[in-house]
Length: 342
Image 1: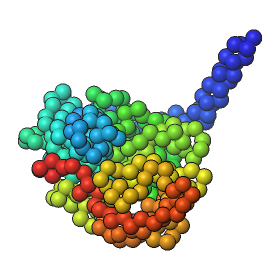
Image 2: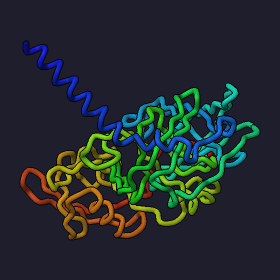
Image 3: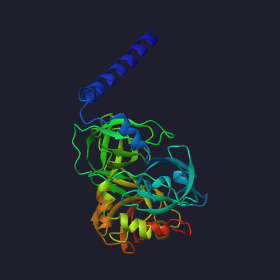
Image 4: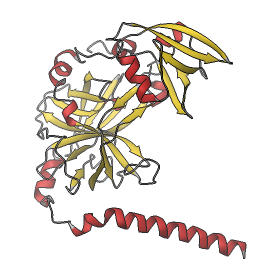
């Protein structure tokens, strides 16, 4: 009897979830012809999508957190530049670019920006590449059909819609003011471009998000880094491999919010906070005398102190005692282990 009730409860839960999805996604079907891409055009767009496979040294700063074997997709934005999400390629010692025709060519990391999360790579050997244009990520309508296009060697493309533009704060000293949240989810989001029916790039896939539509409400989707964040820094990334202005101070902490408290969950080895003496489970109370209670407030307060290199006073609570640390920030790019060509 109990088994039958349990099955009934599970089926009821499934029905509720399916009904929720039907309510959310019904506009996809009712407006299927609104802004849809012709099949031939879509095939042309796929010519500009590549697969990316990276090998990372075991002693790289990001090896433990992101692994030493990474993969995803990228999109060609000019004849020598492929745009992707940076965590796939940062600190890579070996990058393999896979073209749609099955040809594989060696690549190199040519630029990375932690503030946005973008990474760019270039083929080492001369190769003819077909590019897509950069669109305007500030002009996306809620009823507009969008397309998530991973490399066919990494996953399947899918139709999506934007459902939110709310802020995002990540535990790895990362904050975006207006990322693009989409539904339904695509499992091959990493580095995949989000494009419109004209084949213009609107964003690059970064994360799976459990509550894409509304915070706290189960609505599995993806988060994309808006392409407009790339435009002011693209020249710097291509020329110098990094941004040359508005370089945010990096202090080398991972943290999480818990009931109005910011708790340190990881201290980067030999990073600024590690050198200063901050430890895991310390509770961050204030930055330069300003109380902080959430990640957004914490990051913005740290970043308001100036560019990288500035010293920051951080007050923590440890075992019930208040301790002050002076943390000398750095440029995160200087913290990473880099290839000679970078």
